[in-house]
Length: 162
Length: 162
DNA sequence: GTCCCTATACTCGGATAGCAAGTGTCCGAGTATAGGCGG
DNA sequence: CCGCCTATACTCGGACACTTGCTATCCGAGTATAGGGAC
Image (cartoon, rainbow over all chains, first blue to last red; front, side, top):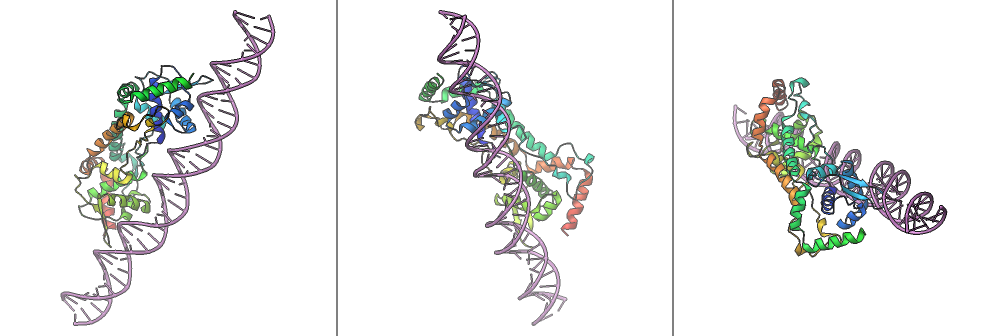
C-alpha cells in the first residue's frame, strides 16, 4: 500500500495555512519555496485541494490559497482524500463468483466476506484520521516546532509577502 | 491509496487453503483456475507468500502450496503484508527541515508530528487486520458461501486432484 | 487633491511529457511419481 | 511376486516485456493591483 508523495505536501501546506492569520492567501509558489518542493507539482496538489473545497483559490496579484473552512472543521482525512482520491484501497473484483464453483448471482451475499473485513480495517484508518483536525495539529506543533524555526519562518513569510 | 490487485487473490487463495484438508498441497495452476485469474501472475503472488513464510511450496509431481502454519496463527495482516510489502503507506521525507525555516537537525523532535499522526492511523488499520485470523474467516464463510457453490467447488477439487 | 482608466504583473487552471512501479508472461531448475526391468 | 532404476511429467522459482498511474512540467486565461493622467 502506498500513499502518494503529494499527501505529505498537502498536509504540511494545510498546516501552514492554518498557522498564518486567517483569510490571508499564500501563493502556491511561496508554499513550494517554504517546503523546498517542486512548485509546479505542488500547484497540482493544491488544485486538488481546491476542487475538494478544502482551500479556496484567490486569483489576482495578491492572491493565493487560503483555508475554505475553520481549522476545527478540517480533518486529516479531508486532506488525504482530497489529494489522494477517495477510492477504497482494497478493490474487490468479485473473484468469488468466477471459476468452476460459480452459481447464479442471486445466491451470493451482497458483499464478499473478505472485502467486508478489508473495508472495515480501512474504516478504522479513516476514523483515526478523522479524529484529528488542523486545530489539533496546530496545538501539537506549537510545542514541537523549534523556536528558531518559527522565528525564521515568520520572518521569511513577512518578507516575501510584503 | 491503492492496494495491489494481488492482495485479493492472495486472500482468497489463503482462504481456500484454509478450507481444504490440512497439509494437502494445491498447485498454483489449480488455484488460478478456481478463481479465474491469470495463472502466471498468481504464481508470483504465491511466491511472495511463500517467501514470507505463510505458505510452503511442495515441489514435485503431486506438489503445490499449503499453509505453513495453523489457520489460527495466520492473520489477514500477514497475508496483506506478504503480498503487498510491509513498507508504511505514508512516506515522510522530512520536508519540515527544508526551506527557509530550516534549523540545525538537533533542534527537531525525533519524528515529525504529522508523520506520527499518519502512522498512528496506519497502526489502527493494521490492528484491525491483525484481529482477524483465517480461522475467523472460515467460520464466517461457512455461513456466507452458497451451499451449491460449496458443492461445486468440492466436486471440482476432487476431480482435478484425483 | 481626487477620481478614473489603463497597462502590468502576478495568480490559478488545465493540457502535456517522463518515469517508476504494478501487472502480466515466459522459460529453466528441481523433484516426487509412475512405469518398466531385472532378480 | 518384489525391489530397484530410469524416464517422465509436473511442480516451483526467478528473469523478462508491457501498461497503468504517479511524478514533473509547461503555457494560456483571468484578475486585483499600481501607476499615470485627466478633471
